[in-house]
Image 1 (cartoon, one colour):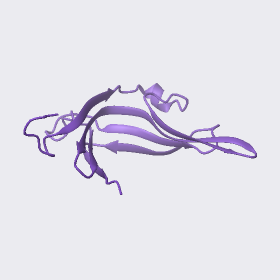
Image 2 (cartoon, rainbow, N blue to C red):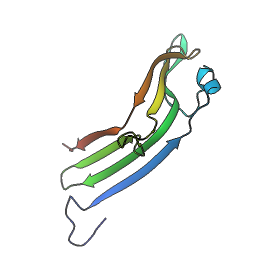
Image 3 (spheres, rainbow, N blue to C red):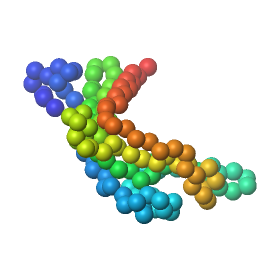
Image 4 (tube, one colour):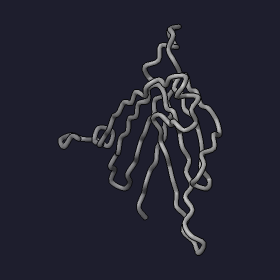
Length: 136
């Protein structure tokens, strides 16, 4: 952050991260019980009949993932500007033998068994999002 001569475009908090997920062996890929590196979002619903847990997972993550984020503090709002870069170290664009960013999407609607939904492969690219918060 700059304190002197700062503008909303130059005065922000930022973060940058880079992740490299290991390639899995053929045996690990075919074993449904092995998740490898994974990201899980879970929820617990509590009612009269008890607690139910459900989750949505990205299992068996492989490849490179980069994240960049900025938080802009403006006089009347706060803006969050984010980027997720898929396979940012890829050599696919230059005709090399790079591998895509891969993941297996799965869900557990009852909390007991994981059900595979899809396989995802992204050769590269950037997903961007901006969220602005204005108090009223």
